[in-house]
Structure formats: C-alpha cells, structure tokens
Image (cartoon, rainbow, N blue to C red; front, top):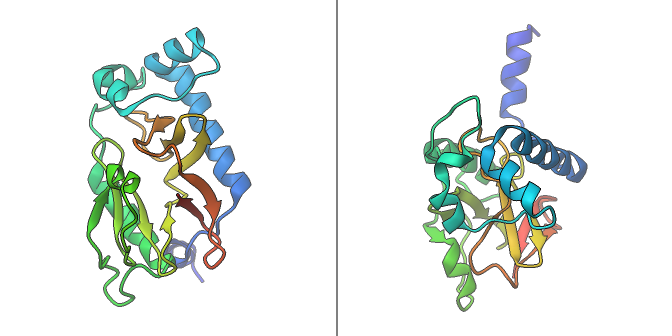
Length: 195
C-alpha cells in the first residue's frame, strides 16, 4: 500500500484505549498549561494542591486561559461535535450507515437529578467544555478519551480538554458531579462516567 492509503485506513480505525496513554496526555497538557497559560501558572503556584477550577472561574478569567503564544477565547464546539460523532460509532451509539448520533443532548447539570432512562446516542454537553460524552449501547456515559480527560477529585469530576489549544481548559469541575466516578466499561473497554 502507498503511505497515503495506509494513513487513510488508519484514520478510519478506532484508536484502542490505553489508560497509561490517557494519563500521559493529561500530564502533558497540564505541564504545558502551567508553562504557557497565565491563569494556571498563577493559580497553581499560589495553591499547589488545588488544581481544580469551576466553570464560573474559567468564564470570568477567559482571557487568562489563552496561551502566551496567542489563541482565541472561545471553545470550538464544532470540532468537539465532530470528535464525539466519530467516537459514538465505536461504542454503538451511532447508526452505522450514516454515523449520525440518534439521541438528544443532555446538559451536565441534568446528571445530578433523578436517574432518567438514557438511550444510546444521547450526548453529554457543557456550555463551556462542549460535548463531553455519549451514551453507548451499554447504557453508560462514555468519555471520548482521545479528546477528553476526566479524573475524580475531592470536589467531583474534573475535566480536561486534551486536543484544544486555546482556551486551555484543564481540571474544570463538572457541576453536580460530587457523587460521580470514573470507571472502565466492561463491554467497550473505554472510560465511562458513572453515578
């Protein structure tokens, strides 16, 4: 095969989940953010143990979340939507022929409410962070791990956007996630958000 054809085939294949690779990507983004983003340099230097920020802090200090090299202050939700649509097919949440998701979008805040039946393809969204997950055919909230990192903290689930360069969103606390946990789906072998 010629190199371009090999690259095209690889681009269509799902990326195999690797917890060490996921954690390394997070550490790389956090390290680079500390070096290049004024907000993180200031806040992490003043309080080394508390890296989590709220959505309100991120919105209030949006200009300080732009790397020193420059960038835009808005999250690219179109790119986020494309990434989640590709990921949805891997966890059985999209129609195989069209690749389109089949469910509605649910705001992060609604996760804290009473459990509602979730259908495959339902998207988890946040106004700042964009699309954060999709319900797989197993009924669990799957995180699109190449693009989104999540970790359990004392305050709840903190999310980092791994692919977004500006604004840098590292360890943003999901509202209402105090009772949530991160685990791995037995069926798909991908990280999931559970409550």
